[in-house]
Amino acid sequence: VHYLDLAAGLADPPPSDPIPLTLVRRVLDGLLGQGLPLDADDETYALKGTGRVALTEDDRAALGPAASRFPLFG
Image (tube, rainbow, N blue to C red; front, side, top):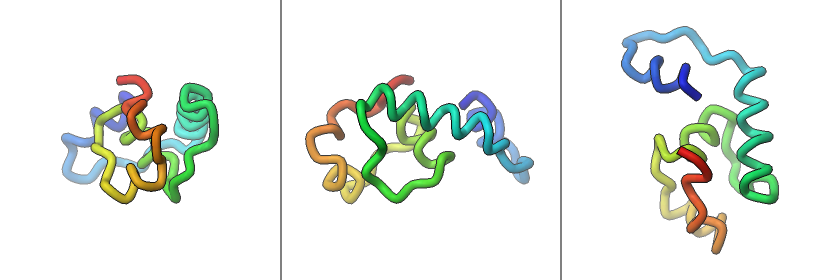
């Protein structure tokens, strides 16, 4: 997650390593108590799950009551 914070300030950052993002997804799913019911890649989930990117109205509708738990940590 910290890599994403650092990369946000770069004009052309190298791509994120998928292995840590997979682990972040597992942690977020554990905190949520279920898999994310959104069609989001690991990076997007990490950003939204930690409050670095706000949920959209569509996200909130898909999450239902679970949307009030976001950010899951941050």
